[in-house]
Structures are given as structure tokens and as C-alpha cells.
Length: 123
Image (tube, rainbow, N blue to C red):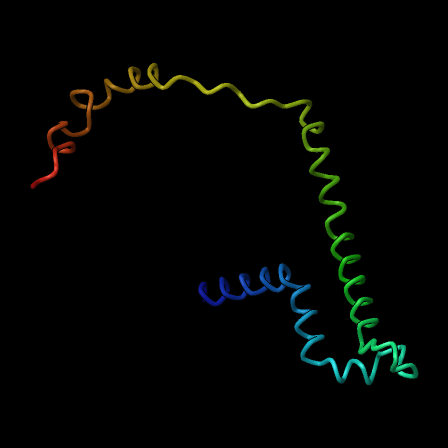
């Protein structure tokens, strides 16, 4: 169950990421059908439109959908620091005082003798 769900979610992410490439592939594979059904310039074959007008409209729709879906998220992310009142990360604490504080809990200051863990390679 989990691998199937993982593959499904990965496929959905890839479909969203490569949506423009899928439009291009669909256009190139179905160019004759798109030209016959949707081409605006059928009466003027000298323009050699061949469905490019329809393809341009589809790309424009795709860009509008992407801009609509990304717009509110971008605004929310820009307002994030203001929502926390100018939150700043804390400076890192030094490790040495913590090591001294917890050293008494470990037998002889270490979990294992140093010779058992660190040794030169054989050979």
C-alpha cells in the first residue's frame, strides 16, 4: 500500500512539474487532429499555422493557471516574518557546557572506551 501511494504521489508531482512539456508532446503527437479541429486559419493555408495558434492559446491558459495558483502562496510567504513580530533565529549555544553537564551520566565520561571505537585500519 505504501509503495503504491508513494508512486502515485511522485507521478502527480511529476505531472504538475512537467505540464508544459506534456502540452508540447500532445501537440506534436496530435498536430494533424489539432489542425483539423481547432485551427483558426484553415481558410488561409499560406500562413502555415498548422495549429500553432491553438497551441499558443493552450500555453497561455497553462501560464495563467500557474500564476493564479502560485500568487496567494507567494504573498503569504512574504508576510511570514511580519506575522512573528520580526522573529530572528537564536545564536547557537556552545556544546562544551552541555557535554560537561551530561558527562557525569555516562560511565567514565564516554559510552565506550576510546580504543574500542577508534583504531587504525588493518593492513
